[in-house]
Image (cartoon, rainbow, N blue to C red; front, side, top):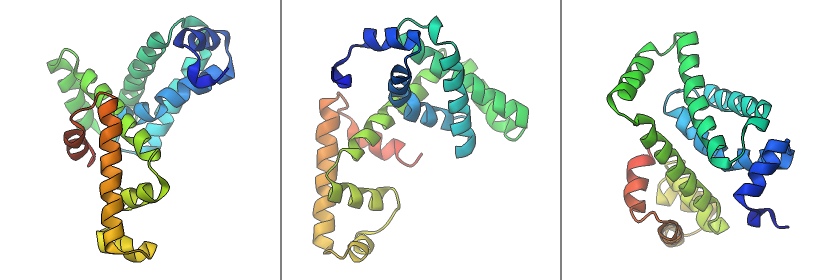
Length: 197
């Protein structure tokens, strides 16, 4: 059976049984979003990846305790938040960040919800970027990830400035269409507001 067609109930059942394929499925589903979420608390990429990896190890050790994917997702986000805050306390490197973050959690009933939503939206955006045609994807990444100018990209790839502009426009159009289909009508706002983070 095609893994993309298997149900959430199937994956939850297999995960509970300790099936490594189910763990891989859960990991692929949440790793990128959790890293972005952890990055809203910790500044160091290595620490972010370590914290998220530790959470997945803890999840795997407790696999038998989970019977549905939503409880797994909840565990992952809560554990990631707690692990990141523990790291801040242990290392005493960013006390100001911890105070600011703790204060914002106290002030908002569900302050973490926005960060979770933001992480999931960015994961959707990144996934769609990876689905772009090769040339459009390369040009898009050089411009928006690497901050190169149109003429620099043209010179680097040995193509005309007009081709770069056309491929950039095509990439944006394809991303907009794909994300609209996934229920993100404010794609341009999300892109402009969230990308710099």
